[in-house]
Image (cartoon, rainbow, N blue to C red; front, side):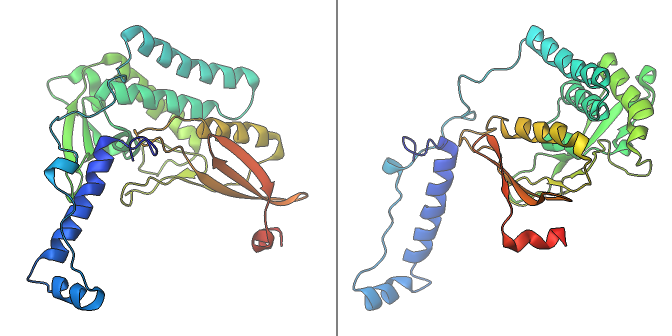
Length: 281
């Protein structure tokens, strides 16, 4: 599994743990599976996972040693690039400036308050609050993180994060007061508003899903498909190397239904099969 599928040690250990637990269940005399297997198959189950042939959990951190955080210079270049995307969209007089501004602010919030991806995506406007010890930050003195990383089998953990970076507070305040209202959903509780994109409030197991539904003008089609290509090129976020996969069904008034597939780091476009022709009716 390590040499061929290039799985992470933590993933392999999880698989081995599942096999160990199942085999312990089979050989436990209280359940009677040993005699039942011997009667049916002429043999009985035995333990196959031992200390000498499984991966031990000896280190608290098992990440890739090549992974390292941004330097301050690299981080500044990254944030500057995100800001430049706003200017580029405005100069091109095309859609995308609001989304680019939102994304640039999102990155600053991640860094300014030290958040994980899921924690950031689940933020609502009401999660910001005042801190009497930092009145200069106004209503953005604290951030209530409601979807912190959970322990196995437990609900998300909450925590409060104090605001300490004035430039991050200025960025989120400008977004909330001047940019977010332009998305046209003033009563929506979420901090990050999307044009068509949606994410479930709670993910199932280890798979994260996103959805899109909207009417797109043909003049904006190239812009949207370029967004999909950028999504397809996002590197794998774990040691298993799993890239983003997705399927979009698009109905065109002239060309008919089509499938847009995100896989293998690319966007593939093909005609939809007969099952999806009802979209053109």
